[in-house]
Image 1 (cartoon, helix red, strand yellow):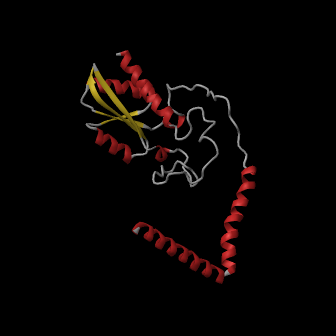
Image 2 (cartoon, one colour):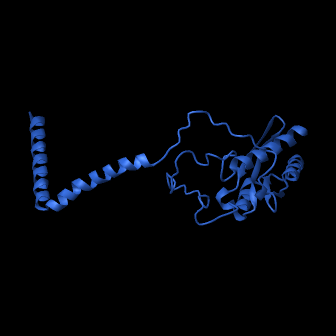
Image 3 (cartoon, one colour):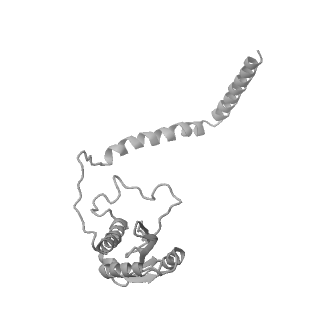
Length: 210
């Protein structure tokens, strides 16, 4: 019987609390009316706004035009460099020399990945780092670490979305309807797809030509 008594006591306390709150609200009728009308008013305002906003229904697959991966964007050709590690391998040095000639980039060689990353962070005109992990013919592997793209934005301005990644925010400051850069064939800003694919393509071609 004790649980029932506890429930009855809690229920009576809840009713008493609600009754006291109602009595307090009735003492200021204007505030009570505003608390009821303001949320209702905003709800009614949102309904016509949804009819004003236009949206395009795309019910067919979107096929984008192909683009070349054997060259970098025009703004990444003059004065830019590409870092790599390690520099104690003749095969890697020769390979990266061919890649830099094809991409028209200056080469920066380092002993380890940390040195290469620090160089990339300290300069603006560095495309990124190519870090070779396995150098054996049967275990040849590497990774491409592109530089901080918003930092490399060729046209920075106060209203650009690419000045900072803003990773501490879950959603963008100014949400847009539909996909971001929906009309960009190459994936849109900050051109990461095209830069990555170009470096990957030339490394692959140089390796297979050996």
